[in-house]
Amino acid sequence: MSPTPRVNPPKDGPTPSARASDARSLTRDEVLRYARHLVLPEVGEQGQQLLKAARVLLVGAGGLGSPVALYLAAAGVGTLGIVDDDTVEANNLQRQILHGTSDIGRSKLASAAARIGEVNPHVVVEPHPVRLTSANALKIVGPYDLVVDGTDNFPTRYLVNDACVLLNKPYVYGAVLRWEGQVALFAVPGGPCYRCLFREPPPTGLVASCAEGGVLGVLPGIVGSIQAVEAIKWILGAGDLLSGRLLIMDALELSFREVVVSRDQSCPVCGDNPTQTGLIDYDVFCGVDAHVGSPSGNDAFELDVRDLAREITGDLPPLLLDVRDLWEWDAGNLADRGALHIPLAELMDRTDELPEGTAIVTYCRTGDRSADAAERLRSAGFAVRNLLGGLEAWAREVDSSVSVA
Image 1 (cartoon, helix red, strand yellow):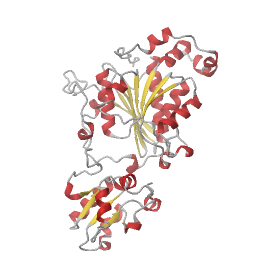
Image 2 (cartoon, helix red, strand yellow):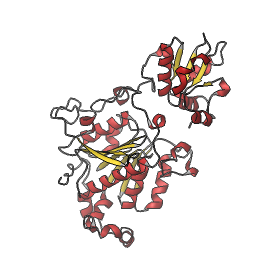
Image 3 (cartoon, helix red, strand yellow):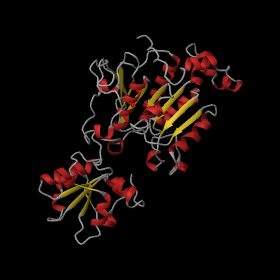
């Protein structure tokens, strides 16, 4: 496979090649720092200047964003934009190596900028402390040459794809869950976009999040490192890129396989006659509206955390049923509110422990597993509602003293 051509020049600025041609030679410190790059025929001084002139946007400073940011900074990418509006939590540290214990409670952007500065003070970090939305995506993505997708949710993933296609920007896709990871390069001229592979998102609740399904801590490090390799190769114009190929890794088997991905001529975004020429409401598109975490979207079977806070202080409080695993219960729970713990896997074998005639509210971490539990119990004749947003929403909106693993 021949090297994939670079995208057309962005409308609002020159390409890395044009900027590199106008840049001064590398400083003595940079020559020493990048010495192992300079001896590579595919890099050399000209390639290092391309890296120095490049502007890369990283969406997410979490598990995937951590290795991407560290390695692109170490490689000498001149400007790193980072989009993230989150703070560091203790449960991030198992995989998000940009951050440390002392950063808990700190903005991820502040933590990332400090760490990148230690890795390479020549790199300019441009922070974007916002959630990427259809209202701001084009403005944020526009000034960059390349986007690296470090997201962990479908609305942002589809948003990144569509914004990059509309702006003629390539982006490096990455995803992880449990023991499996995926990497590809999308939206290069003539190549497929993410919608060519997954035109429509799966139904809400069908695919577990990393919070619900788990992820091996080292896996984002491997996948993110491959994303960094692809970004560097694209900037240099070197090697065979992962455009038209989806790389899939199984860490349990330690195996890699490739799936050929062709451009879909009928793709609504990058096809020959695109039907979507602007950004849309991606939360609704992905089935994530006000009823986050609930596959049914039925008000009668769902309960907001603030409504629950009022009900449990009333004359007939519902029974709170925690369906998480034991280790999650041990880390933090609502036992002081009378919660009963029965793991989802054991639930239907232990229904005799549920009092008859009592209203039940199921909860888990984010509301996905408990929605499943509520459906099962309703089928068995119980009066059950699911807590929207789960224990995370409770801790965020009602009682911040509750620990959520």
